[in-house]
Image 1 (tube, rainbow, N blue to C red):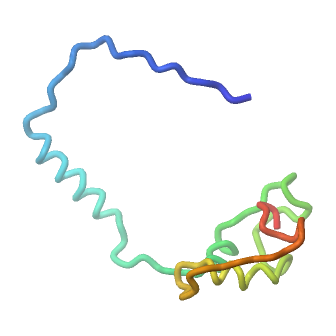
Image 2 (image 1 turned 90 degrees about the horizontal axis):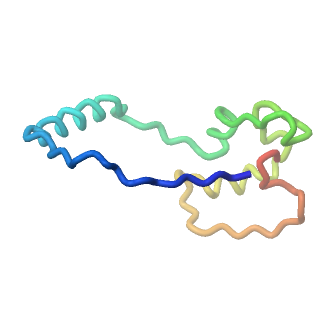
Length: 104
């Protein structure tokens, strides 16, 4: 069951920001920029899914690493949805329980 969080006002007095905040911000941004790789590899959605996606036990009759061998007809649709695809619009007409859920 979802829980709710009640926010209460802070009772502490306002503390002004340090004067050298701008320099500190630059240092933080520079440190973050060093973590970003020079080149981000662009792979298709199907490639990413087969490398990274794992179907948990209980969610699918076939848990484990995701594979398009189970639902090969979805691979072409996933390719069309990839950022590397030139396709801009995808329309799919399919039956129920034929893929597209977390366990397909």
